[in-house]
Length: 283
Image 1: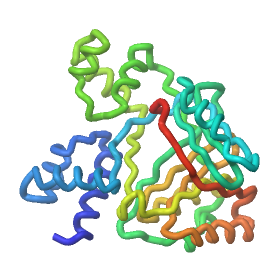
Image 2: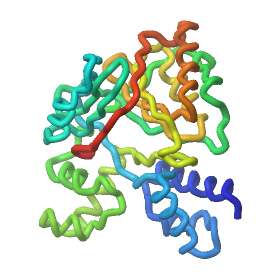
Image 3: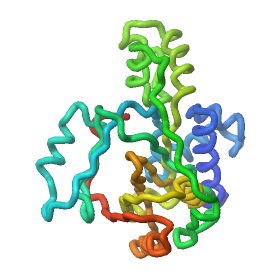
């Protein structure tokens, strides 16, 4: 079977994880039967993770998160970056070059109201230079709310089972509760969460990442257009500003967003690119 078929199977697995909120490869195999042997499906997905075509799935619930962008200050902010990396209240930090020197997300007063990893199209329906959010009309992204009905135990289980494949027995032993309690609570938790599983058909290291901040009246249209590309991209909304981590095939593709700014579709565009990043705590 050729590479195109393997990539399609991998994309089908990503769709299955996101839509069913179930990352078990065995369940996926028996539902879609991409190969006659279950082990062939397992081997394909394991190889894809090693090649960074896929990443391990994680469940994500948007907590009270404060995001901050630190403007460029002529020199890399290495000391601040290391400080944030070692801060137990920081979920994620990225050192940048360009308009900003640093972006980080921490526990605090909520200004992060939306986040998503786009589910790509295979094959791609458009390229970056064909993005046109205006065809959908104006529209703002909905705010993602923190779950109101979770208790302390729910949050403990969420923290321990960000990996949806982690054993309920193992978590139960760690928290001193039964595996059945973990499983029952986890099913409830999943209803308020999304599955975050990035997909990069050429392998993550073969793309050129950029971090863009911008404002637009066409937020929904822009996200819809990004879903037509053949690789994942990350979207965050901080107050009225979108932060996009985009994965280009080549650097010149940034011109597609410069053209959108020139047309007035987006404004306040600021461009950076990552130097280093680290997960300090998982969201």
